Length: 278
Picture (tube, rainbow, N blue to C red):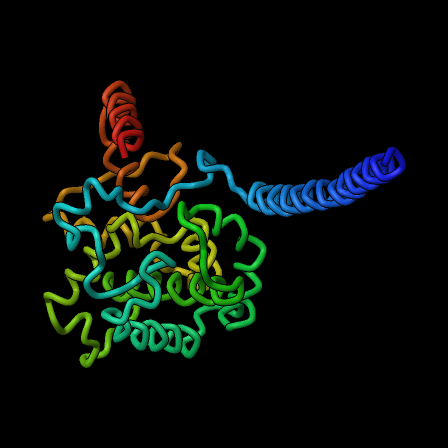
């Protein structure tokens, strides 16, 4: 009888030991699984951190209009004729102007105002500043580097050619729909003043200098000529010390430069406060 009890007790002890031995690997498996999940999650977060850009970078100067403003009258902030830059690039409602852009570029290359006015020179001129130009935009660029570069060249040359035609520095074809229809002309000018529809200033300046024929008005003069007519004859004098970030910023600096320095500084502070609210 005693032997049976001892045997039974021994079996129970062995069974408990077996269960303990089995439970140890299971716990280890759980720990390993958690460790693997932690490593994967950590790696995923680290990758996002590595690709994060400074949201307060001084290079950023072309923004999306805050929803709190655009929701009241979205059409006031969206181009109706021409897309400039990446924000509205690919908008189906603006595709008709893409053909006009290409035609304007064709006319510029065909006219060849300078020896450097060829496609390869234009591309080579913008490529070194491509990354800096991308950093000017608040939103993430969702097109390839080459597509972005192509957009900078086409849009920049279109704006330059448009200013030259507006100022009668080059001949305007009678069939040019932008200049034969008054509402179209004003619509293009209005679109060029939208914050979401800007190119970095250095793109405009670079392409204009590369293709500017001797004796042609300066880029600043052409811009003033275009928007002087648009503003009903109000003459704005650009400040010589201002660093322009884009076309709209140039217009802003022009008006600020026409005021005494104290008023200009106050206006600058007001503008910065509005940007912070955005």
